[in-house]
Length: 565
Image 1 (cartoon, rainbow, N blue to C red):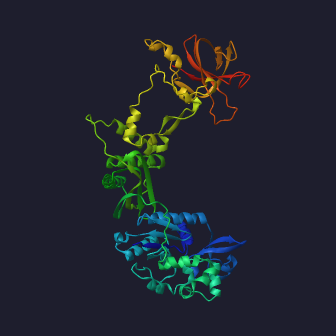
Image 2 (image 1 turned 90 degrees about the horizontal axis):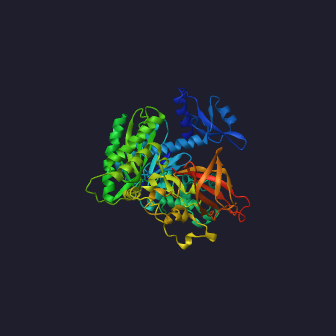
Image 3 (image 1 turned 120 degrees about the vertical axis):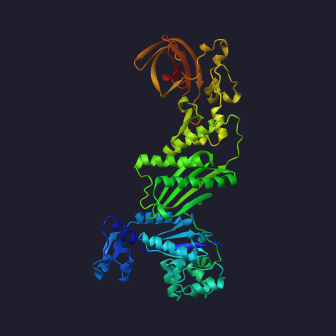
């Protein structure tokens, strides 16, 4: 049984202005009308009026000179559509205390799906009364209505004397109750309403008594689509502002909770509730959100992420503690901004993944879990995307062969943590056998050979590991730096080079190791011949010559790319 609650805020624009005036200590005189003004077709017109202005005969759409002539005491404020939309979004976020399915119904309303939730607030009548009373305390004039369909709830909230439409009524009874409402309750545009009024059709009952085809041919199918939704013939859905979380737990308090210790203790208690739900379904949380609903309507949210599916209560609470401490360090001593306190605290799982039970070892160690906990705690303080690790990147150029990736993406489960921690580094004395596909034209070596050790190591003595020079330098320069070299031949190894105003005489050189350019690059990309060189003082360098002599360029250039230990 679906139940929709439509919330109408007819004076949202002026209520926002009055709240702003009160916050600045300049209350509006009760006898003075208030209106917002906007420019429409080169004329200043009233966009919205408050209850006092409406009672004095002022209406939206009137020109400002006419309104001033009628009421000289009129207070006018420039209309701000963005601020009004933000105020409506804030009210929608506040309404999530009643249901997670809250949708915007711009420009002056909300639509809530309260199916199965009304009994939590004492029934439908008490729910409507509570929403209207709480919004009135915040300074917003609101009118709410409940019905089985969004169209019926919208019509009742704005035009109906009836506030709650029972769900067990048949179509004939629903038609009888809506027959006397104006056609504006179908949410038709002004042009369509004018055409229907010209034909003598002003109420919903007038349309229901006429044949459908002639009216649909003149006014379009939208009219009857709204009418079918009103009568329950067609089912319509709403688009919630936020997706409903798969798991949710909350606590409600008669008096607001203001102390940070009490908030953290409540989050820990809610984490225990979520832990039982997650364990029952064999899942773990990857993203969680704590929503703190303040008594005055403001909502404070804290979101954390985990590097692996998490369901233990203590680690979940610890992540939120770290997140709150990070907010305190960044924004002041009171990150919660409790003021009068929070009367609703909710903990929701935004994203969950399957988590299988793991076999514990005899040692009882937590090596893998400790590493994942460290990533999560750093991510809670700094953001998970800022905690990175280096990973291989499929690029030919050595400076692009590694990339910083979020560490949480690489440690999605304890098994992946274990695989990363126990991976053995390659033995520099082993020479992997390259497949035929890793060779390119003219003996050029692709990325597979770049990641592999030099083939020259295979010809070294196995009993002299100390003489083996690593295939790649310990330190790789951020960008290759140009050097000046002297060589016996344009395509031969260098004899000496000058780098950073220092000349180096070479005692030994090994190479070349050719790396072809990426085929996705333009034809202007050049091949590289890398050399491992050692000067007379024992310092070792990684040099390369860019461009094949007389094939790609007439004057190859030399660069310094890295330093060995």
